Image (cartoon, rainbow, N blue to C red; front, side, top):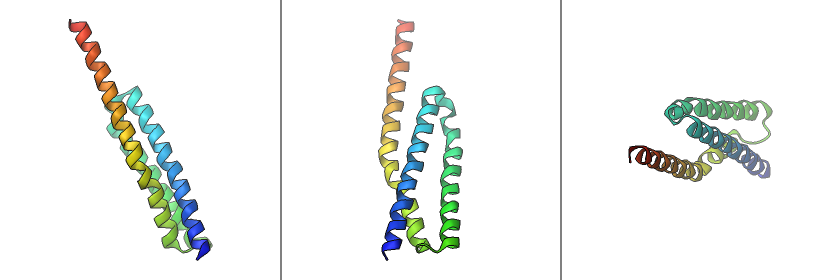
Length: 109
């Protein structure tokens, strides 16, 4: 039972790193070219699915911990921080829009 919990915590920690990498990638795309932001979704999803597949194969081949614990830990690690990171991206997007509007008002005025 302890091995299952430790495996889930480790999978969640790596999932948190995946979520953070996705946030950094999204932030860079949003700052560099906001019109391409929707296309970054595919890359983020590929990274998340690849991690889940990796957890599945590692868990099924090694039998260190129950596979369900590993998968739940991985999913929770990627999903729970998403609320925080999404809020930060929305605030960043609002800031970008505000600055863009201010620049357009100055050039018109």
